[in-house]
Length: 320
Image (tube, rainbow, N blue to C red; front, side):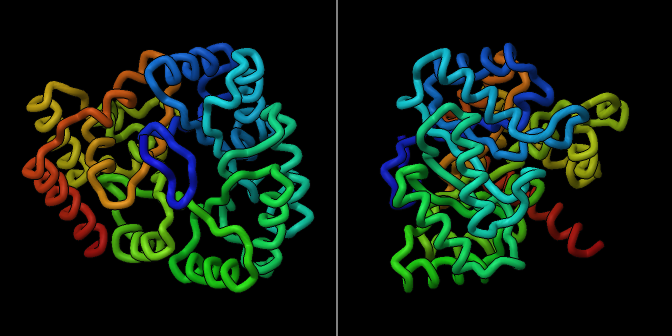
């Protein structure tokens, strides 16, 4: 299994997204998804302290609680790698030092764990000096509450600034980066963010790997979006250019005898620096496409076809 950056975290090359836990799947179904993921060889779970505060009746932390109850019930904390994030919980917004400390303790309590394997700054907080933020993260590492640090949704300039400050102060360096990146959303990652991540030797875990379900092929008409929890996100790609990407994915999937979703993930895994794309499942039945993706033998010619059709979509977006 690949390692993340300069860390000793060995992970399955698909990162199971926990954003659905407590949202589109209840605790029992979430536990079944987690069981099936581990049974299929997975060991890497991604969540955030804010998941899923956007759901009516939720307050944030629901996903962490579900993952925590599952690990406690299975007694498997040491065999899984858990990543979570800070800055967006309704009670712990931002990246001030006191907030990070309090949010980390709250996450640890919900996860029923004494450590977080990978702790991300979820979104940049330009109202707080970066040196203060990094000092707080470093204290968590020194205390043993966090093993490794990650960066999510930061600009290339701020990634470089983070590395400079951490190096100058002897703080723990980040090992991971989470960008929005997939076949229908290739920029600014490829042009701006990937060079910054590569320079800092950050392992990349793209989120929205399947474009809110659009890259599974199940949303091809406006009618197919009706009632879908992620319909708004997937619907933004429902254009002639977006559908052309799905058509090529479909062709490649048929050639390889696999699913559209597996090919979309395999394309990501073919890119430099990608360690484990993040993808979620609302039921254990959906996991087969995710778990099989690392074994898809996508060819160089098929990658070129996908590159070309998706680059036309990017060019069309710039032109409009």
